[in-house]
Length: 368
Image (tube, rainbow, N blue to C red; front, side):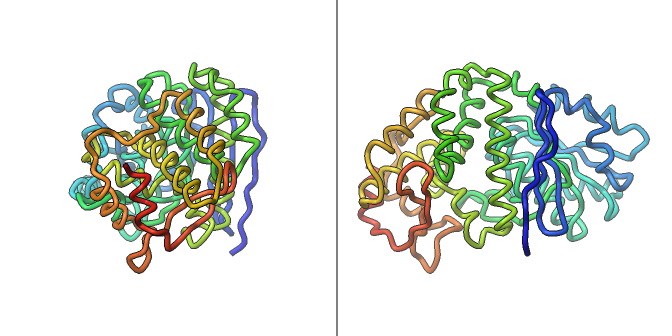
């Protein structure tokens, strides 16, 4: 299936990027004031039933802004507690019960108003109800805007590992209102920048250099710089997804740092590290392993470490995590094949690749 990426006309304050997947497409809209611009997303609702999935932190801030645009429709809400530990199959069951109580038909739609946890769980619920209904991503964290809301990966966690249950289910559209980022804590904001940096580290040396030049403006939340960074990361990911929707090849590169990072998150019971923080540390570990295997140079590792540090991200394994435990958790990663680790490493900034058969002693060495 041939796929292309088309960028729509932009205004100075907003960007609109089409993700085109053969005969299917959806638009990612990025800019201020979009949640309140109901005309932009209300037209994507094809039926009369709407379930708004959010969490107890986001709902008091933005739920009314969304639901006031649902006049004339049959709608209800389903709220999660905040945090990765609530992205569970049990909560999917509760969300499905909420759809049943609403009487949702096959033309119903789920609005995912929240960060990556809400988006992943809402999308998976949409994929399950009547074998697939529409959902709209309304990400409220930077990390969700630049990563999990785009590409159709949905899922939930198990105690054994992250995102082990899931489905590919593309949204009808993505509404990324940059105004909502003003309420993010510095830690949550920095976690989102990890995914921005990851995109550049994988395959765009010019973007990486741009991030180095604009790191201070990004850390200070300069609006113009931030919208540019989000748009560039979304455009990059959308192109990859268009070429490899179900991760048969190139899309796996987007997991740079994730095999390490997911193990770190799991080892911390999803409370020690935010996802973006796990990815940041994981990228450094992947860079160190690449260096150890003779694939890259220490200068590339140091550039990555410095950039992550400048935007407030951790770059070392949290104290108390045991290398052998982390290695065991890495074997539960979805990218592992036939019991062998399949890692995303690099040959320097902008040149990531899939590597199999890495000697586990080399992996252990970077976990100490």
